Length: 265
Image 1 (cartoon, rainbow, N blue to C red):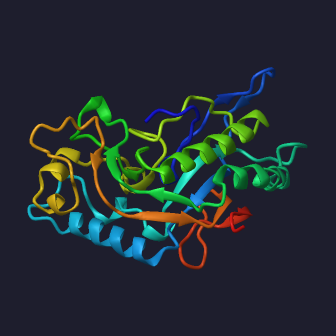
Image 2: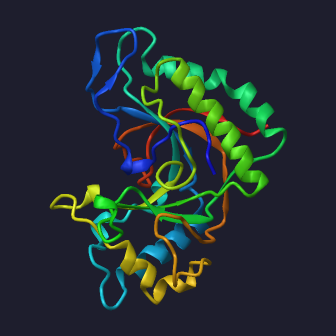
């Protein structure tokens, strides 16, 4: 499932201390905005994900480390194609990023070739647990596999947008991105929101719970947790590519869009 670009998702994103090539400037500023494929506006998806996370919260015995403080509100679900630190300097402003996103629309529509941009949520896993221990997980995610035409179109569009913003200097993180394991995904649980700070949760306990059997399609008896498990949370259309403000909240709890590229023909 490898691709050639780097993306980080939702509240799990962190891009600090990047170094700008060709300058002596150290980018220690916090990211201010991110490029988003939002899907949290779909009511049925909200309901499905809420049912899933409510089930995790209500497991008996309780799942170690799983509590309501680490649950991401379903209205905020999205895939992130890159994070940016926008400034007031020429070429690095929000207006510059907005202009670039709109400029990309023609090529994005060519890549879609008359089809909708859709995100299949068919895999689940965790991001790099502490000491590679599934009992010390911090992020649980849902994401796509690449075994459908929808996923291939998603890959092509995501790579194109990420590369364009990277080449223009908006995205400093140039590590290769893969739509598995720890990258192109929707975050469902994130311990960075926990107070007090980052106590991990047990992914092993989640996978061995009776509750999870109603969602997972992968035999779990000898499953290697480093590989995603197969799930079915549907395939969801993306109406627009957005530039969103980090940490923002709209009227429904969604991230606030500061500019978008409409994907309607």
